[in-house]
Image (cartoon, rainbow, N blue to C red):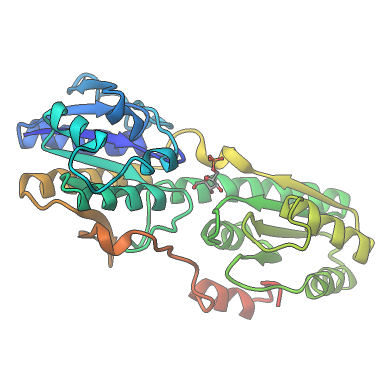
Length: 335
Ligand code: F6P
């Protein structure tokens, strides 16, 4: 069999480990031919391919980014038309590929499903630091991003303490609050604001002032980038930091972690998760089980029909156990 691999959407640590996992199992265990498709789905249109072999798959396990390059797939999706002479179907047939492995987040899996419904053999592998792909317990990239954000929050404690300031730190996650919840709790934040939970800035300020009254005139406020704010032209952190400073009178500074959370080497956990998912993708191809996304369910590698994933988001449940535990320890979620 001849398979193609592509990475699409935002990059994250672990994509190369996944490419390696699929490629090495396909080549060494199933004797398949493996082709890299460059820069996401656009590489299929532009026939931008390169052969992958044991040599090109070596030394990439711990590398951030993606050796294949990536792109956002919105423009590609417009070309997906049901009729047979679509350019995509033509390119797929010309390529001689028996299957395409699509490594990506929500948007990518939605596109994968559309290609699958057109009759292309597709296997999806969920990827994102946001951890918001429906149908899998966890996505690779998330653990690394939580490690990066937690280390940053740890560092903010000492400067907040030294200056008796409130530090507001914004983490990524798109519309989901998984990074904010896990890094906020691991980093000992005093306030954690999630898109999934409404919050009252007056309540946040009351928590901060109560801490000051108890002799702790500094606080750490972790804000997910997707939280709702009144003035949408501002970064949530800027808006919230200015409101806190104005109403509490305590000096407040803000930090936006941004793309640092997506850079650098994957954590060991993410390397192994990526390897497990990649190897299972190769197994599904060998068994001819296409139109599926590999996933983790109850800690085990599994797979589900990609049509069940398309268009859905996995958001933080309002009564997640970490939220309940945090509330019992006096951590505010803005209520
Ligand atoms: O989906 C991953 C992510 O980093 C989100 O957390 C963030 O909102 C988005 O990508 C940024 O998109 P882009 O890389 O296109 O600026």
